[in-house]
Length: 610
Picture 1 (cartoon, one colour):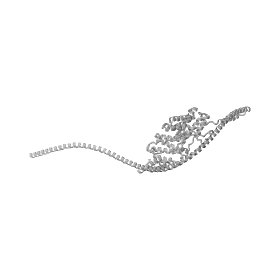
Picture 2 (cartoon, one colour; picture 1 turned 180 degrees about the vertical axis):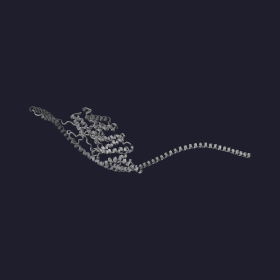
Picture 3 (cartoon, one colour; picture 1 turned 60 degrees about the vertical axis):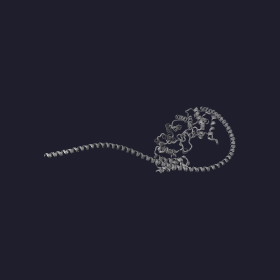
Picture 4 (cartoon, helix red, strand yellow; picture 1 turned 45 degrees about the horizontal axis):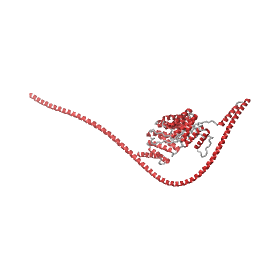
């Protein structure tokens, strides 16, 4: 029993020692594992840091790759643009080569013409010699004619002396008639008292007195102010600028720079949509008015009085006006009313043939100063001379003095005649045009508004003056960049123009169509601008013909609108029509023709690029 216990104890002790060794080993393994865990955690932190750095590096590499891809795309686009530019340059070089060949042909043709001209010069020298001989004969005839004229002048002076004698006899007869009338009146009154006749004899007597007075002194001067009618198509489209007529004169006072007023319309001009007017340019600059001329609201040109007599053969209007001025100065005096009117008449004739001459300015200033001295600053006759002088000074560039006179004429007529009188509308419109061209847009807008309101009250909404004021107000809104308001007002203008009589051939309607299309294009609304240009092409083709420059400009505008919308095929067709029309109208070397050909070439390049 004890032996078994000792064996069991020994075995147990042996097992305990084994277990202790094993425990120690396990503890050692645990310590090693803990060290490994610590090392692993450190390695994990290192790897995480490495992973973070790698991720940041990866993101930066991706960003660089995207930038490189964008740069590559930009380089591809640049390459494509350069390729298209090279193609365009090649086309331009071909055009230049063709133009050079044409110039060579022209030089050769001109050389041949030069030889022909040399031969003609020799012939002309021979003709000149014969002409000199004829000149000598004509001079001899002129001398004979002068002698005959001297004889006629002497007869005219004798006739003048006889007329003066007859005039004196007429005055004496008038005095005798007055005395006889007075005696007859006294006799009739005495007879009426004796017979108690009714007083109707006095009425007959009064009529006799009135009739005698009219025959002796003539009718009183009356300034008629007829309402102007709308100008006809021939006047509107005439290449010669219309100009103002003074109330007391039959000749226009202003030259080609005279400001326009409500009822006079300028020559119709199409507005080009060439680039700066494309849709991406923002604001379209308003079309300048090339000629300013006022409305004839002061009445149609006056007829020449019977006392002046018909103009003699070979005597032009200027020389006749000079002769009238000299005769009036002799008869009525240098500072008389008749002399002031004659000064104005001569100035008007000078302005008609040679605008802005120094002599015309001196005559207008003489009439101005003489009217102030005779009638005062606020008289209507003085205000007429103020207005004439203001327009003359405006034409020669004396802007500051012209502006003061414009205001003077407008304020004086406004005070004397009211805001809706035609004379007041003339002055208001002149002032408004001056302010517009001087870039004083706010005050110009107010003046045009006053002029339009006065035209509406005086003539109605569909009158030419009302529509012209509205058109200038559209230009002001456009210059201020208010394109939406300008479009709305231009639509109203177009509607009013369509309501006019003979609206099918009305240039006002055509201008409104082109202006509305240009405004819509400047605002980027090309799809709305296209119908306006199409209608303008139809109207111009029907009114002026297919080869008229206005029709060609309308076709070019339509082509630009179609190109901006991406309708390149149709745009190419209209560009070609515009280029061919301008070639026929102006020739191959004209700037408008070259512009149309360049636009056609660019459109074709864009079609090939597709």
